[in-house]
Length: 285
Ligand code: KIV
Image (tube, rainbow, N blue to C red; front, side, top):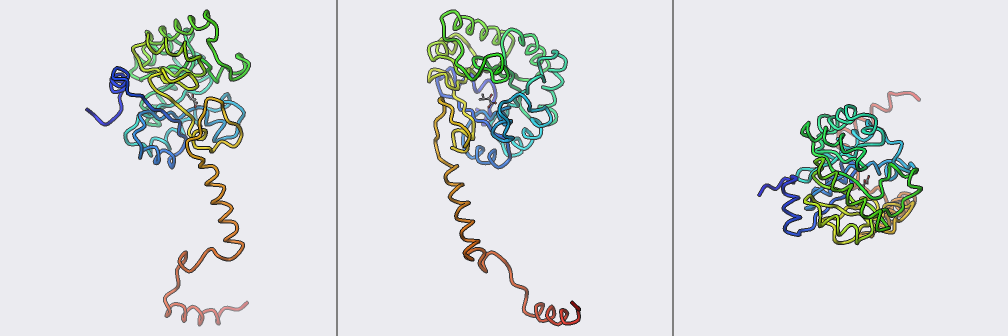
């Protein structure tokens, strides 16, 4: 079986109940680290607007910014599937504009495919992008680009009616051709039913262990997010604390004269140094 991750490989993982792992990435250095693991999916999420650019939500990130970061991530990834997250208003205005923007992720940034948020209102757009040969990942439940409409990062599908509607929307996206679906902040009972009813892999975030896979934001799972800790997150390594220690150590060694030492620089050859001293005598001032 090919080592490169494809939609077929992900489907086989679902069928054999092997959990799929997805993580976000926004730059070359973290992509290189991810590339040393066997993570299947790397999402260049529009969450970069918060964790990389310090904005309060995902709404203001642009196509150009998303492409810039996707290119950097792609340079560091050799095996995982790199997915570009289509930013707010890059696919909602018209299916034609959506196709052009999806194409830019593939053509300019080297992404395998794209992810976009929403159900029925974007089903036709998804069909058009898929028909052009670009794999699309769906995203339902809490959809961050609708944060203002939803009133905050709240669980979606909490009532029987809403849960049923979410399942119907998921089936519609599958029918439109998405190769996988992200379910964000959906009660675990609803997520379990959607995962069972869909043929395609369902990747959960805050949606319980029954999903076919999980996704977390790189900065959240590694303790790098100093602003806020989402309830659905687990810090698997407090890299933020390690970085802080490292910075404190750097500051004190520079201030106390312990860094740099002779090992961190280079001496001139003796003869060059002698010549240098002689030449200095001829320079006034
Ligand atoms: O932008 C993002 O990070 C996402 C994931 C949380 C799924 O959409």
